Amino acid sequence: MTKKDGNRYIPAEERTGNESIVYFTRDISPEGIKKAYEKVNANITGKVAVKLHTGEKNGPNFVPSAWVKKVMEDEPSLKNAAIVETNTYYVGDRDTTEKHLETLKVNGWDFCPVDIMDAEGTVRLPVKGGKWFTEMSHGKSMVNYDSMFVLTHFKGHTQGGFGGSNKNIGIGCADGKVGKKWIHSREGEGQWSVRKEELMEKISESSKATIDFFGKNITYVNVMRNMSVSCDCEGLAAAPVVTPNVGILASTDICAIDTACVDLIYAMCEKDHHDLVERIETRHGHRQLSYMQEIGMGNMKYILIDLDNDEVRITPEKAVEGVKPFKLIK
Image (cartoon, rainbow, N blue to C red; front, side, top):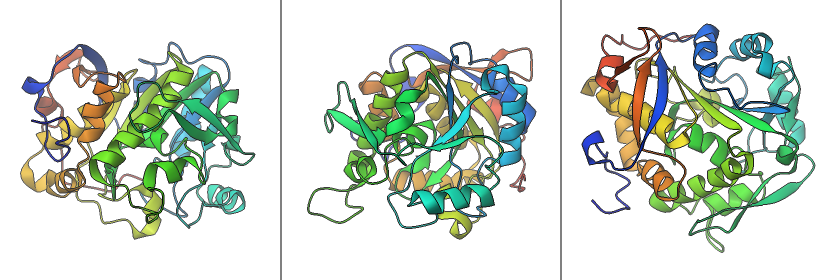
């Protein structure tokens, strides 16, 4: 296997390096998010940014705002936190601050402060050890926070193959006019000219700038619910969901948590995972994972801990045992 085989799934036995801890619960609810978050929130202190995908207007699949409200009200470290976003590169409901603010209200995100980080400009942060970038352009106000809680709706993605924590901050913290353009477009070519391995690597380098800024004060929870092959940026136009719901994962390692989510998809039977696996492989999405490990963002090897059963170590196959055909969870 070459380093750039982003269309190929790398089985566990071929992975090298250290192991990180990933926690797992089948409880897809606000209580499940809290259960997972409490395992990985030791370094979430000070002024906290909650980075999530707030979605296009009336999108059916993003993590419900009522769930996030409950979590933020109940968790002491999040009581004074702000949800953070940036404007989009594509034209839609969130490409300007004015439209973005209206969309946030429509989707129920007006229960707490929401900081559109590039509303007042941008900030450049270094990309250490990257091959595409030496710096990334982020929303200016990101540097005002001490910690970041990355709460991600794991799903497919039209260009990235899948959207996990890496996509959430790699695209979602880059500002809408400069950073996202650098990631998606080559100079003198079309708006979406970057594809496959190059795109996965650029997303990961952008994420690394955010991770390096926060250091140990960043943590990740992925919600594997209502997983369309489409991103939440497609809103009501998203493809129908056919993949079963799985559960909620948490880790302090971004590479490990996204790898575990991909493993859980692959551990399903063919009919349940066909569409999402095809989306990941045709977009060469696996390169997100291998490149994150290559540039020191974390480990593809991990220990999966079952929070529902005495915190024993389990396999992805055991975790998805008995998953039921897709049913919309509102």
